Length: 69
Image (cartoon, rainbow, N blue to C red; front, side, top):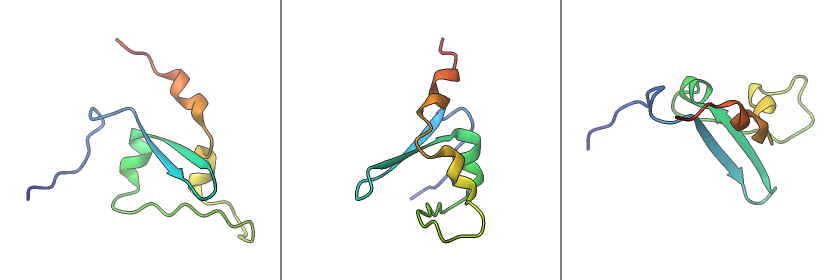
């Protein structure tokens, strides 16, 4: 099996959905690629600081900024 990393031109956004919590995340391609091999979506309020994924939670409006064609 040949594996390759994603490129900026492969897609615009990656969507992640946590079914048990009915929460979705919208990651721009550059952010998604920057995570490397794993993304941990933390949904616990006990943390001292928010995870960097927090700004992409329920962020469907990000997809409105893309120019197609």
